[in-house]
Length: 293
Image (cartoon, rainbow, N blue to C red; front, top):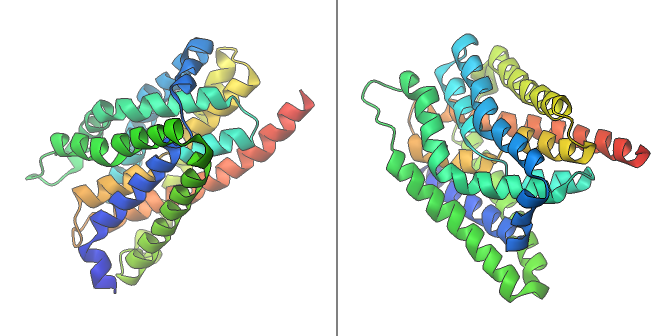
């Protein structure tokens, strides 16, 4: 069973991402992009954090932390990917500006077709094996096929079948979560998830990276005087990354058996667990904050 998973790990990741983006698309309309017009300053701040400051934070960790190469590559992947469906759900639960959250997610998702290969090349090219060539074209192709096309199809479902779109969205997202569980089980069973070998120091580095993103996302909106609900959306959008895309890129860059693949996978999964805990804390804190307001 585990050998079957290893032989098909890439397609597990591809199916998981496609379902997640199809589910997200089935909740979106073109009107959701009007959030850019309604909140241009907040949108600009959110985009600047996503595309400039998050990679800068990752660069500092990559340059200064001295972590294992696989961990550094994992941090670069986390910096290169946008927010995802979970960030929108968390923003809604935290009573933040859901229109702003959806706008930032949608635009950064489209932009990552170009930005993800560039950020990865800038951050980790020096840490890859000497004979490694960054597959920019393949990364862009995979983002198009497994991320953007399912997103557009989902939006089409919402437009043509609005009564059924919510049900379809939920089924897709539940299916995506189920495949994540299969990925975790398959990786663990194949010996790719070894916390003992990973080391406590690397776990602390991932935790520190998540906390750095959280602090950055809290301070920046306050510094420029954004409303609290906009700040909430940006906090969650920056902290809650689209680890679904990270899993696909890892499976694409490092096929089963590659020495770095397991460490990168562990980094992505551990960050995913940490970001869910931080996201839950942000929901509780911001619900109380907005209730008082």
